Image (tube, rainbow, N blue to C red):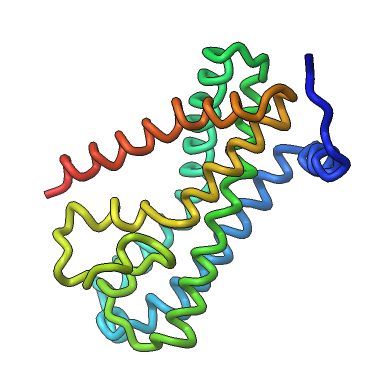
Length: 214
């Protein structure tokens, strides 16, 4: 039997009933704007890049441009993979949730990661205003990385230390609520779907990344 939703949950269900293509464009535009701010006001002002000339300056601009072009591609791939993971989990646990709905849940949950990006921009624009590039790259708000000096962390552990953060946990929570809204059954099963599918694969990805990084 489908469970009853509270008025707040019903409003949330209405909120996620939108044009998915339009929302994808909005997500990409926000990501591009945040990337532009980082590239223009932080990375370009780092001493190592500020005075580049000739071929070095051209290469810097090319790599920066490639980052902008990659945004929609990376998001499309990520939402496709995460959506498939959720859809598989729903199928395994007997939930009839369409792949399109799972893709939509993954897209909505991605908004969580705009928060640490905004915090990072704020930090380097107003607090630590003269970083070197490695300091900028290593910093991730409210992550496990903050417990270490980035200069002492082996390169292969940097990404994993950054990925283990408060916002990743919030992402899991949003995925769980998304599955719960879509399936309208026991919330405990929605929790189990994320815990037994996405989280193990996320941890495997961190392990894989550590082992392939020199």
